[in-house]
Length: 308
Length: 80
Image 1 (spheres, each protein chain N blue to C red):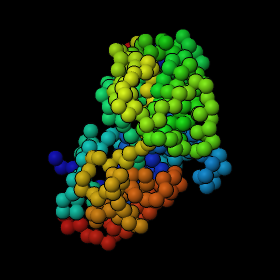
Image 2 (cartoon, chains in turn green, cyan; image 1 turned 90 degrees about the horizontal axis):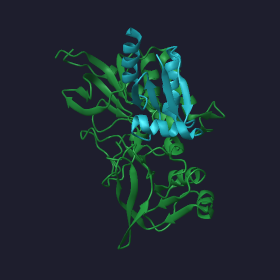
Image 3 (tube, rainbow over the protein chains, first blue to last red; image 1 turned 180 degrees about the vertical axis):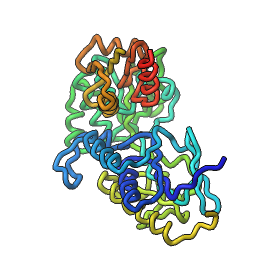
Image 4 (cartoon, chains in turn green, orange; image 1 turned 45 degrees about the vertical axis):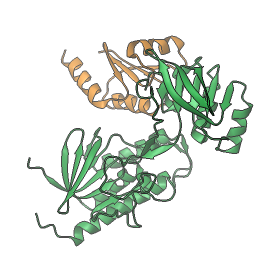
């Protein structure tokens, strides 16, 4: 297969990937953006009040602005495509997705993070049939139904506070000794009449027929079940870096980059939440994307590619 | 062609799906399942699942903002 060789492929289109694409297009680099969606986690953000230039903007609105910016340059976006593998040979990268294969001289991985899975029986089977990873989106569908929220941090607390308004019974299943979010939110959850907190408790499995009917939980050596129709999994995020083993990662699975967004492989850069950059913020991801694009540009200019 | 979108006000993919259709100039009926109990039941019944958005394009059900599937259904429907 005689594939075209691009100068750059940008994987992902959250704030990092989109900003990288804007910088790349202005340097007249020959590139593509390959992504599952536009906006990434920004799309899921509620109110944003710390993105310079906007005193207040919602996640979906900011995503729209990002997309408009890309569209104004006519940037080519291959979507929806999920990257399944990356190959590297003789200064040439091969990116395989669920639809196609692409070749390039440089790469920017900006694939962000996604909700962490529990890894218990029933989780996959009942996904969208009671199991959800987005309380903000699907919460209202569970009105008048008993639900369990799995997790003990801010996103779990947020989901509990949202669901207590519309659900008769909310269980908060937390696997540590105490809840660990903002004190103000913990206090609200503790004072809510229809939220039952189960600390030191693990979920064992999710059961049902067509839809979820109950969960089995374990507390110390005791196992019991709770009748719920919704299971909201809010146990944090995990980097989308599982499609490659050729880059060095830290113990969290984050791709290790230096201050120029360079990974351990020359010509392979990474930016945003998928990396070990300190602080996961929209504005930081955007800045990292800009740096990665400039680093890729510099790399392209400094290197001659013999197979040309 | 008849298009219904079952959505919640807080779901970003619902907004994206609606914006996508509006951008193409395709009319649709938006049904907010957070405030309409009967519609919520209808959505679960027709789609066999509980996630939003759900699009019903004529008789075809699309779960999530599946752009490719929406495009192909719009095309088929248009050709009729």
